[in-house]
Length: 79
Image 1: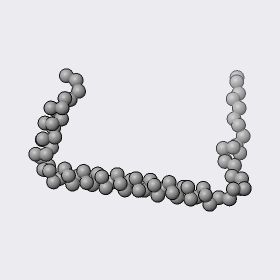
Image 2: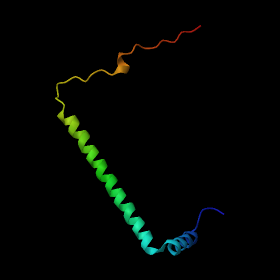
Image 3: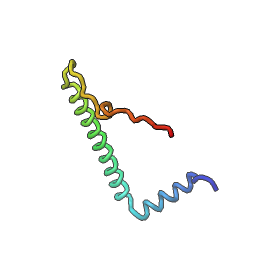
Image 4: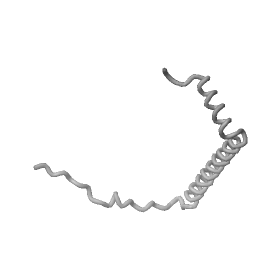
């Protein structure tokens, strides 16, 4: 009793094909592929926008200090 063998996966695949039919399964896989392509396209567009925003900054500017850098350090008091 360990992991599934190839025969178990073939039986599961056969049951899925019988329940849903070949058309539905191929349609689902097509929709899945479209979703992946859309995700990759949006990730590429986001990468292009972030590169464009860093390219627009002048080289001689000094970035503003963070609020965390302005805060005074907290010292621990030992009783």
